[in-house]
Image (tube, rainbow, N blue to C red; front, side, top):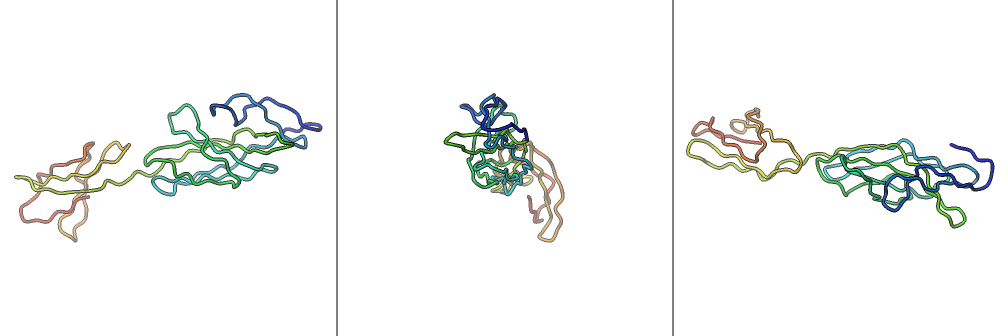
Length: 193
């Protein structure tokens, strides 16, 4: 941390609070002559398709933490939470997307607000949802397999097994939500996924 001789001093650095959530110079000061350290050890853990846990080390002398998030490819961060605890479960994400997080520490002295610099950035990519509503329909010379599409995927792998006890084997990769299987035999049970 940066040390100052005594009292409360104003220093201009890149802090975490501003009107439009962009990084810009602003006032960052701490009490006791010591600037508030930024949070360290930020980690992310994907809990499911639409939930990410973000955690970081506690900062001495801080009373709150402000957490920011942006989607990969976006220019600006958005503030998503003001917290007392040093972790947050983010349920505002979508499946198959990558997000980047950063956090800063906050305290108040004599009715004034003071903020640390940002922590390092940490990313997390949520799981992709599985295709649903898989259906198989008879065609004159084969079987048509259809399913409900999934957001933000490049394609689908189609697998098939023969009978209830067979092993699934890869058939094809496609970027549409249907596949016409002409390699079937009459009277044989097929299972798709």
